[in-house]
Image (cartoon, rainbow over all chains, first blue to last red; front, side, top):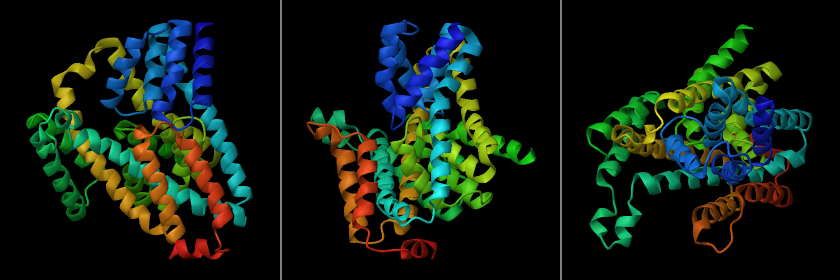
Length: 186
Length: 190
């Protein structure tokens, strides 16, 4: 019974949170108030954990809430509940696109969608850079020298040049960056 | 069957290393699926991300479902989606069971401060690559600048525009203002 409720609650979250990531948060707060499966403090912890593990915050939260409520099986089922609506919707859209792939309206829609998609990806990059490369609270405190996180900026330049020259797998650079972060105390 | 298993394993790997949300998976998808395996193209990935942003659910899962479906139909989509979910579920179960204060360890914080630097460089490179094929004229450049400004400056605005609305509006504008009939796809293939 608890398993069905977990699947149902996270199914609804997956169905109504458009835009991924943080879009799931309002639904998680609502679920916390309604079910008391997890507290608001748990959600804050999970945001921190999501920033420090692979995977999306929605998946992480559903796994965590499911585990607290129904053990390992609960964690797995809650995540599957979250993933199910988007799985069905994307399959339907893919069928639609296959059927209308020659349509000039679909071609024209993508002509507008592509620059928008890249603009969103750029904005996401800027949001990561705002945390990773600069320290906005130092500027507010009047400490202009502390605004730029120099160690991080140097690392960013090195990664950029390294990617161009070495052509290693992106994961190699992620792993190296983690080690450098630990050694130089970023 | 073999194909489905390969799909699952490929996405298991991707799910295990996608730090920092759906967009950060783009450079990894490019290397693993476009360059190495040829399962999809950068053009298709751009489209999948565009749709993934204005449909319900988590962007990275939406993109995984699309790629799996294109390559191996519904079973492929299932394998990709479950593959992507596996590592995050296992990691969170371990953290929930044994390491509840995982995020507060200073080693973890330093490591992820380093990883974030890498992620923003990787995203920058992905954007530079996609730029040429998508920002093809004044209209698409204007659209890029407008959406970018709205998305970055949204925290200074008195109102907030959901990303899905921006993306859908762009699609509508594309239909209304695209004068180029049929040659667009040819242009992108060059």
